[in-house]
Image 1: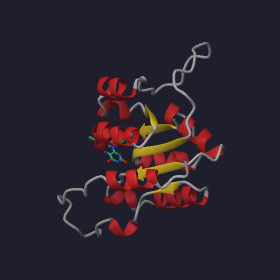
Image 2: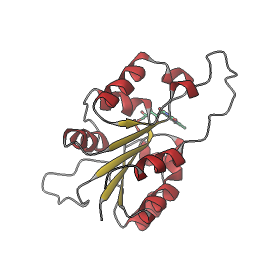
Image 3: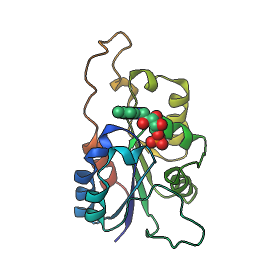
Image 4: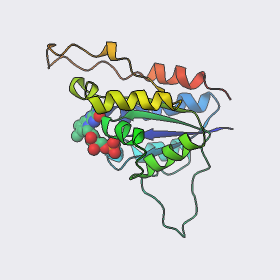
Length: 176
Ligand SMILES: Cc1cc2nc3c(=O)[nH]c(=O)nc-3n(C[C@H](O)[C@H](O)[C@H](O)COP(=O)(O)O)c2cc1C
């Protein structure tokens, strides 16, 4: 079975991963979850470990430790923070998650990124440029600037729901 790495960054949607993982597994993926150090704070590690059969990795291993995860055939970054999107577009590898993603991009593995910026962050020039750069590299970025509320919108307006259905749909469109 092909191996999918689901990469979770530090945002609240990381708590929803079990349902997304279950759908990917039902679609025939062997799923491993990798988290950024901040992403770990938002997810339920024991549940994901039991569900996938693999530990949730978040740190680079020691040189003499064995790899505990099979190599990835594809990646979904969900939720993808402003921070990780920008660092990924700059080729920075200062978390295990970024290191694996950078390697995946270099190896031309499919990478789907599902950002979750707030109104301000989504308009930051680094984020706008980062999304453009990632797309130029062939990364699928599920982000539509038109979906961002206008600057004068009520700041108490709740954020739209995280686009898990779009993430699943994009995953199903990948060549297998
Ligand atoms: C409660 C909470 C919710 C957050 N939600 C988001 C978010 O939705 N999007 C985002 O880009 N950052 C969010 N952040 C900020 C990130 O967690 C922070 O930038 C962190 O450094 C990201 O690290 P990472 O990219 O390595 O996961 C949130 C932080 C907290 C404390």
